[in-house]
Length: 473
Image 1 (cartoon, one colour):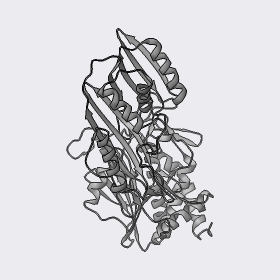
Image 2 (image 1 turned 90 degrees about the vertical axis):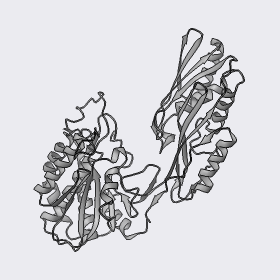
Image 3 (image 1 turned 180 degrees about the vertical axis):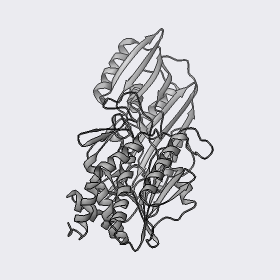
Image 4 (image 1 turned 30 degrees about the vertical axis):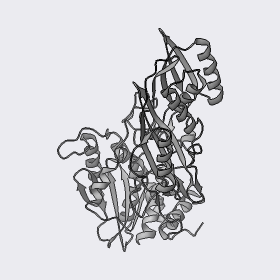
């Protein structure tokens, strides 16, 4: 770890002295329900996102920043007197929906408990956004002279596709350096390519029994389904029990069966997860596909197609081995692939898979291979190629500088990370994700009882201020 800069003691003291103000500003933002709503005039994402943009605008103006509101898509704050802008810091103020199952506090009633502040958006991404605000405020109020400018950019549609940034960058140029505190420390410089496609087939409806009548699993392409359901006709109870017992032993899922006249309704429960890390879940869909193989179903077109899918997407294969697209590289890691949606009813089968691919993946060695495999299996796959990977060199001055700042304040060795998910900077050529979550710490992001550690928020403000000074002074 390098030598601490001369300004460190002064910077640390200022941020520590403003800790309580930082918490109160975060509470102000968290109290605003900024879930995307119905668009209205002047409010592209509804009243909540517009209200939180207005609140941040008021905060930045009160701290003497030069503020611009981009039609309530984004709001920016600049330090006056600096030269040409060199650094953008992107954070978002919109949040995901909430449930009624919070236990510590209500989602929009922020509460400090020990070193944690609870509330929707505390860690994603209002808390990190406030840390960035106080980093800029510290630089301004301590009077550090900057040769180049820094801009805070706060958006309001990250959770629903980042059209806020699309609007902003239709009017502004990407800065030389950009980071977003909307992910993990130490630093994410590689985001894998994504290929998510629908496939379908028509199947003749056979009358032979036993038969599969309906199959339903998953609702979103990027979520590994934790539940799957099917309806069978003509099964013997002992055959069903035998197959279920074997399935539970093989896969670790739980299965419940209910007789409905001559039909059996079967529900499989696994564990949901994000498609970027399918190994962290237990895919109920692929387990139910496996059940169609274990059951003594009559020969039919739909039985054959389900057996084919079970072979192409075997339970526990999240690396695409059965599909012959497994690949890996040292820099970005392994390919992951999961079958996340599958429905069958009235002779029509339709599914969606989600693949996160390393830097060596191309449409030739991935997309076309999958399209050919599906065609040979009797399925048509949606047209189009993959969304390219995003990568910034780990050896760049920008990345090395940010990691130096992280090491100084965290006491941990800095390193770059490659992830399967996409961050707020995925479409920016020179953007990286930098903070604020700690590796291995579950802050319940997107879940009930979301929280941010106050010590991490304060540390992040110091890291970001240090980065501003190293890059812009």
